[in-house]
Length: 69
Image 1: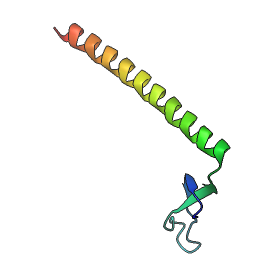
Image 2: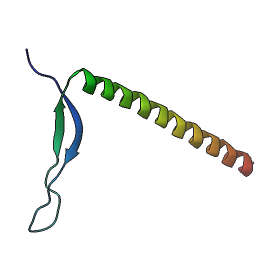
Image 3: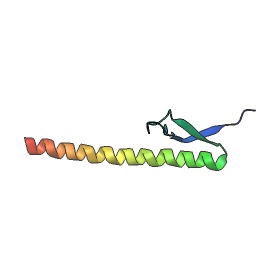
Image 4: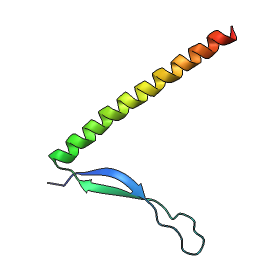
């Protein structure tokens, strides 16, 4: 059975000669029950945050449209 991993981010080193970023490399952790639950909570949290930001954007847009009329 193959092991499952969860990507938790990316990292990139800098080129010592130029200071530019080298290609990024994904960071993984081994998936266990705790990691999968944390991943699911993060998906739920980001969904709520994006919905809140979209609602705020739509309210500001509607207010701006009303002022323009």
